Length: 334
Ligand code: ADP
Ligand code: NA
Picture 1 (cartoon, protein in one colour):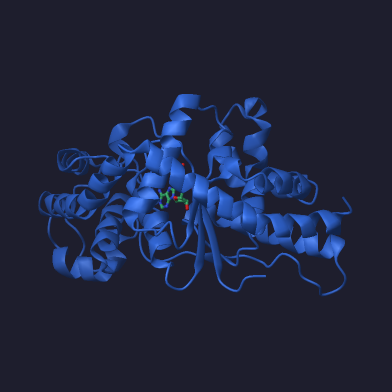
Picture 2 (cartoon, rainbow, N blue to C red; picture 1 turned 45 degrees about the horizontal axis):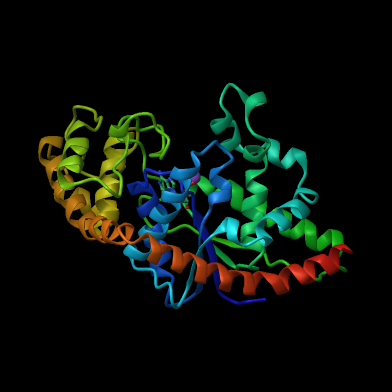
């Protein structure tokens, strides 16, 4: 098994946002010198909730464009979309038979996403974490950079790996390594700009709740200006951010974008009001996101290039997963 292989993915469900960038994509970029990286556009995850087919294809290219624009080297590492590599579906079925219903019943994201109409959610939404486990294990990946929101799913992937090893192999033998989470730095959970108790997400009904990777500097300024806050000035020390989720979120975003910690942001802005802090944050966000937004737009204008990157990546991903699947089939008795 590889020593330092990273697997992670982003769903092509549109509205790529600052949370996806700060919580995931920028870390993907930073791992390239030290790890062998496999970065997936998880279109099979996306369809757990209905997607318009034409939009799905466009959104798949958009995530690929975001990866490349952020600085992922598609020659050295792998960028591809999930549906093009059949190991994901095949291994999911086998792992569906390893995972326990009780384990899936504990997944909080299913409860959140299915909402009140749980009986009417797709079976795919329910078994989504098993697909995520298969994504990781098909590569025998050792490390998974994900936002804090995916921590429970990664723990499930670890449990599934362990149960597979226990069920099929001799005492102490390991086929699937237990993947380790890589959760890094501030802003691993970026919250909605309209509600400090909800994470920033692609599916929020309000456009004002998220900063997207296609927003202009004006869009960003408008959204940050309108962001919900309390009326107090920023506290004089970081402890003062406790119980102030909106202030804490904006300070966390500033910190992540500036490459500072929250204490350093408070050292600069403590005691100042949002009338001062928000314009500074908007300016910083616009400055940091502009190169990414510009490069994404340039790449999206060349869909044939993006398709060729995805196709080459899929070819290499198939070459990686095929030997693993051959072993899995043998282990299971197929
Ligand atoms: P979303 O949850 O927006 O639909 P995905 O499920 O495609 O996005 O997640 C892609 C990556 O972005 C995952 O690693 C996830 O942990 C991260 N991520 C998503 N939302 C946030 C957020 N609000 N803050 C930090 N990271 C996030
Ligand atoms: Na998510």
